Image 1 (cartoon, helix red, strand yellow):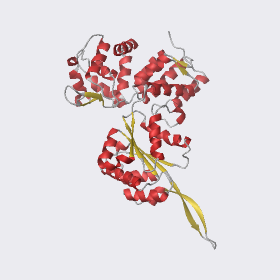
Image 2 (tube, one colour):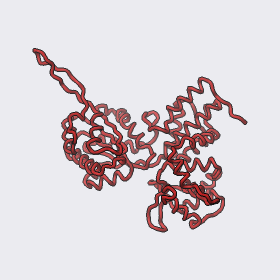
Image 3 (cartoon, rainbow, N blue to C red):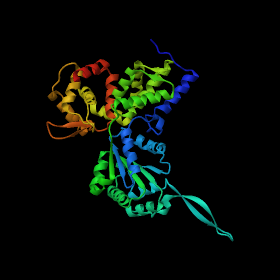
Image 4 (spheres, rainbow, N blue to C red):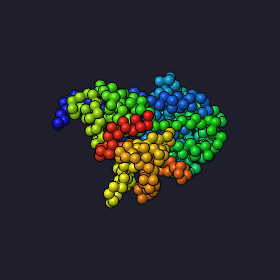
Length: 416
């Protein structure tokens, strides 16, 4: 049966509004669309509220760290911390300690008094960016001294800290955090990065452990992902059924990017049918759209990992089983879980030796190192090098009939 096409003004307007409610390409920056993460918000707020404390927000790529950093200032305002000045900057690979702090300080303005000519002493008030009052090459003590003189509370959010390639930056930033804490300066630094960020900072200055709140961002729970869908669709007066929600949250694997992507595409598929309720068939249509919109780097990495001139290599099936395997809080899975998933996919029992070489190949450069391996032989743990690859593998597997909803139900029953 052919699908109807909704081309009325109302459907077109809703389709455009869906693009604002779901943002797969950009982090969330509105509190009304932000979902979950209350525990992480509380810890970051504690760092701001406790003088001398700072924080590092870390986790896998794609778990929503930048979205949390975006909405944190607004949540702090809702908590009536209205005096707080906020500077939020993104790091890049060329940043040095000096360039990073000049970027952060130019986000803040201070009032200056400019004397005016005349018989009576008068002056006018001008606004200037704060970086103009610091040396061209500031050190940790320069930053500490300048912020201490400023007096008013300041929050610095330094995002993508792991992109910096200049090695001394980690040591100098650790020195800065210690100086700010030791002098009880009314300024809070929140550093956002991957898990290595914490290790690097603490290695450079073990003594900052006492003044650095470590906030891990795990993958989102199904309930938190469901909240994203509910908030997004309620913004445009649409609804989504429970089976559709469960399928999208499963495919997303805790990564909000794919929840936004599938929410947007499935909502527009429903509008094509002139409906405001999102059904399972709309999600199926959304999968094809999501595969087309996936990052080119992800598509190429998948092709590199699974392409083979030999038939029946099981490369796609084993990689799919890796994507289906349950993971720990750091994204790792073990071969035994791959065995269970692969047996469900193939509808026959498989032992680990039947696919052990595939796991090794996926960790090798010849297959694009799509997986990372840690631990010792016979006790290896694996995880996807790029977390965003995992949902892509699931999308591709479903689209090409390698698994069905019945497969998922069977796996759920076997693990119960």
